[in-house]
Image (tube, rainbow, N blue to C red):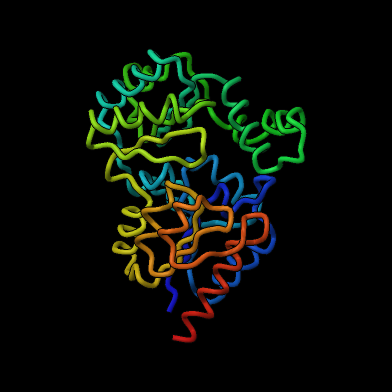
Length: 292
């Protein structure tokens, strides 16, 4: 019996154009008709995720920022796990000292240290999913995308805490040479701040949350609060920030485009995000549950 469907967004629910393909929409609507709810579990914040869901006509709860915040379908915060203020400030200090591009996320929005660097990061993401596309076209799409236009920019992200009194939920570092820069920094941060959880959603970034702010813990809590059994949950993902929920769910699916190490933690593999992987996972899980 399937009680709940949970899906990541980037590289999973979204295709190479960063849209939700019709086959995924149809599969989600099919589960709604069967009385099975759908939840997005993403590294994005509410606004970033909602734009894509609205375009597809999907209204659902959003577990955002790698599991550190839960929004109901209307955007009300139901649960939030913040990074301790001083820890967040210390981590941002390290980023500024090293000269890295950074983003900080709160319950209100995503904040970037540089619009130009944000455009470069989204350009790289789009081009990576569409290698046949010219860099110029990828940059044009990035500049016009919701991923650039819906967020806010700050000269100093630390003022979110020191002047605006916001609690930071997630911090992201991006660099073109991650193996020699931000990944060693991730090890240092992990050793200095054991109450953090550090993961990655694409090869050029690291993402820092509170240790209790993971997708796996968020889905487990959602099940407890709503009376679902984790063994009856379908989870679909593609990257390292999805591993905790893939390990937790009874029916776990890694995308064909997932990192090889990520696939080791899923029970099943589905097709790529270019080929309706979420829809195929849903239909496979429903058929599998009916046969048991």
